[in-house]
Length: 436
Image (tube, rainbow, N blue to C red; front, side):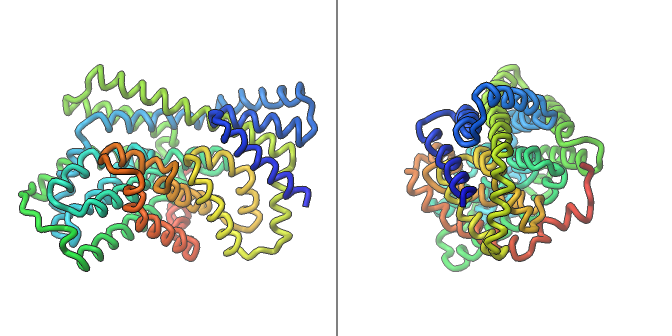
């Protein structure tokens, strides 16, 4: 039972340090140092030497370069009129469906997620257009906000995904295969969302009133969608054809975005300055957390915590279903208080060895983990998508959370389906075998 007390002590230490208001990246470093000194009985000097070497090594990881580049790509698009074009381009394709242009929330977020990698950026970019238009045309406010909250979380799952990059670096699995594994689960969740909107509209047509607004032709709409579609093809095509690694593809994506904005005469010095400033702030936060997580992972290794805990849980002889259920509850609870990247980097040194020991594919678990993290994006008190929508709509956070609840249930359903049919995540990586 010593290993259980050790794990409980480390987890308690994490919550105590973060509960004091310490920044996540410095909090993880503090926990790593205290774990070695207090729990592991390693001298303070030796602990400092060990962690300083790991800090330098983790900070020089080539894979980290993809993170600021994908963030920059999303920031440039956010400051353009591409979101407005997305709405206008999708409108004629969704207008005749039950639920009407509510589906632009789902399809728009799915498309933008494929060039963003961020849940908050996806929600904000699509929402700044659709929330105003849907309200003006008389669509049900709660259904409009809820569908955007749920669909915005697809930014974490549909590649390129920042959380998947972080997971791939920590778990040392192919980021290309992780990207590919997220495609079909992303389509599954989007399909569940659209199916729910269709069902609600058929049961209560007053939620989606007849829309007499004239739309552009479907042929014209394709031209409006071309910037996003071309970026998806360029970035994903570069990865899956083996022309570029994910880090190199991120650079290709930024270059292609600049060319598109230049062609559209939207690229200005002010836009570049604002995008670079926002990218610096976001990428510094993400990369510093990731580097400090390497310190925590090293400390856990010195304590033999991951391997010992995995052996202990294996000795309990839990069925795979009970193990996944326990981990799902664990991650949903973490999602109430922490962001997705923090959850990943703090928990993975402990949970990944357990999952691998139980016989689960680490690529499949990466997708499963991202879906569980997505749940945290739409649950209070730290659901980032809820705060983004509160700012966009002016609604109280409680009302936004209530609107998002049905989509929380749908995402739980998707996680269950993925457990029952793991091939949904594994088929594409196995069939196409993208380069590592």
